[in-house]
Length: 437
Image 1 (tube, one colour):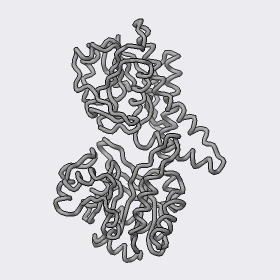
Image 2 (spheres, rainbow, N blue to C red):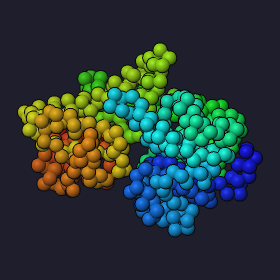
Image 3 (cartoon, rainbow, N blue to C red):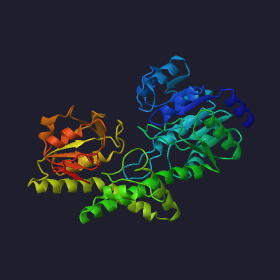
Image 4 (cartoon, rainbow, N blue to C red):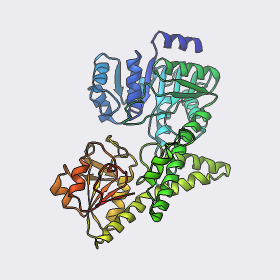
């Protein structure tokens, strides 16, 4: 099986399947097809499948012309029919792994996708989980489902591994193709063949590790590292505010050290598909071993309360003007979780808006990248533009995303009060109406 798969990779006769055509799956499917492999994308949402098959791109990190060309050439197609799994030699699972209402891992998408794959899995197939999850998922959850559903044996009839996605929406340098990849599989042969498959597609280094659990924990470490350091900075920001010290200036001074320090910045909370979620997967799994990840849990507590802290600060700004939060008009600038993208998954701005409304403020939002968003089952519409008259009509402008295509000079000149939680207005000289987190 190993030699046959290596030969098929070499002569590009491998057929690739990608389950989940979202921020991770669609860019991966496109790169596989661009590398010369016939690729089938699987998704349970008919509207996504229809858009892909029509060559209509909906992911920022995918080049529109690439998708159109690959579909037109017949090298990439999408389907909701999992029976086509029988035709593939390599299949990557790239489905969401969110948290449930109790802040515990929701692996239902991974489980249901694996069950669908198992029904049509054939001998000589490579299966790779890319979705971020807790250490042990590949061997404890995926492997038994695939073996039971297919009647095949892992390591003898098919190869199984884990290779964590590394997608940073909006990153102008690192995309799917040139970002280094980690691969951990069940058995040395599986690791070698799966790593070879990724090397045939990607330009970034492919790092082989000894097991799926190592790769799973590695991914959790990447984002927990950031979660903890951001938590440290957010906590120090609260302290610095009491001390009358600018944390932003402190960080700028600290990062002049050329070794031993990496700059992290405060903000209204954590957003995105990884950093706010991944530590919960680890703390949940740790409890199985009677272990409490106290440092991780402390950082999550700090980061989770930042939206409430920012609203408290906003309230104090209004108080200085002898205004109550109740009835004040507040414009939130930016609901994307990071600058210059249209992705609002887990965005702290949504929590900020929720808390502002809870305090009876009259809240609108403006985001040049996002016209509307869905949150807790409801849809919210933003205002379509900002100008001097609109800005002047609000009691407080609250900046929660540092988009680069916003006229901050105009905002400063016309706003009554501004609370800048991202320090995006740092270069504006007149700061009489600006307060920074």
